[in-house]
Image 1: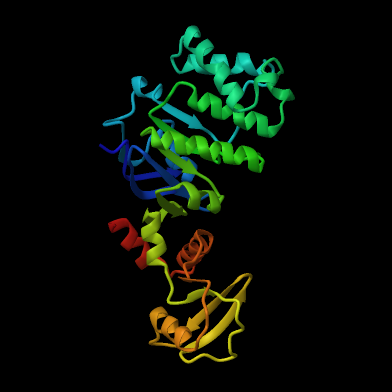
Image 2 (image 1 turned 90 degrees about the vertical axis):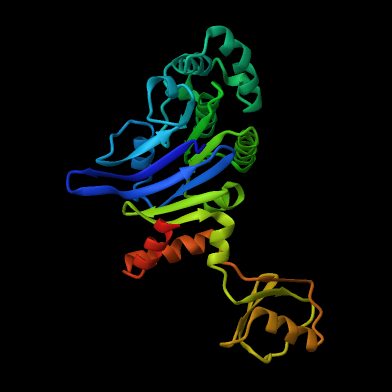
Length: 312
């Protein structure tokens, strides 16, 4: 059973349609990326899923049916905007937020110290929240999101204000939660984190779905016929069947002439006696795919792509 099923939701605020016919599903044991430029409709979609907003059209099923009060304690939500009480100590703030998720004081006392230790916040537990750095507050919010052991975890910009060490800590925790069978939906602008974590993604812009599917499937769909190679030998200025040679740091990108395949290029290199340390088909990064799809849509060239992805 899918943990989250979103079917053709739409939402307008006055004359602005924030979400237009958006559909997707998220499964247990999956990290799902909700992507899009600022103002694309991501946060509105999340708030519809959480029953904060009622959609104008469409429906959402979460954990097998409509949202109700009993399901809210099964969901952990990290909003982009911090929602911590600033004038109380960190420990008191987290204790109170845990009680709002149905935890008893005994359960909180049993679990909170380990979380504070894991997130390296133990020594700050008696400090007021407003005295903590932005990164510490972000980690505190993550504790509040996870401490009640939710089945569904929705995180909006989870790496905000975190240094590389703490970013890796959060990535490891999200992977652990996925391995435990939890359903994770993540909204972020950091495409490198999406590439390292997500199993599936949806890309929306101006409320429309532009791209939806498994990450590997999307990479394959946008793969080029270019070849990346690494060699310690200098290449000749011209190679048969090669239209362009570009040096990219340690790799060299070969763009074939029309009708020439990457396999043809590889055969040419071998026949030329060029020793290869590495070679691979050039695939655009997720950043490049993101820009290509969004710009194509805004230029009026993305309509066919949008329809194809909605049907997928």
